[in-house]
Image (cartoon, helix red, strand yellow):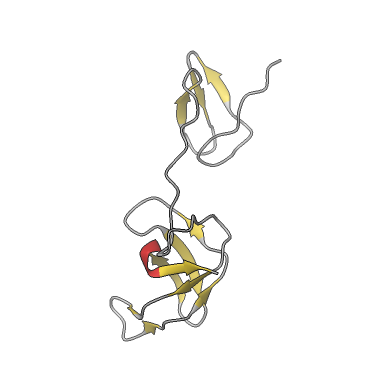
Length: 110
C-alpha cells in the first residue's frame, strides 16, 4: 500500500485516488498526482515578512470598521491569525471588537 500525500488545502490525511486525480473527501479539493505541488505565493506583511497561520501581528494604521463607529487603533496586537484567500488575507479576533478580516498590507509581524 502506497502512502498518498496530504491535501494541500486542508492538510487532511484522508486523501484517495480517483483515476489520475487525488481527492480530499473533507474539503473536496482535487489535484493531479502527476504534477508536483506548487508552492503558493506567501502572504506578506507590510515589511515583506512572510506570514503563517498562528502568527501574532500588530496593526500599523488606524482602521475604520465599516458600519460601525469603532476604530482598530495603531499598535493593536492580534494573536493567532488565520490566512485565507480573497480580498482580505487575514481572519482574526481583535480584543474588544470581535471577529475581523484584515488586509496583510496594514499589519506587521511581531
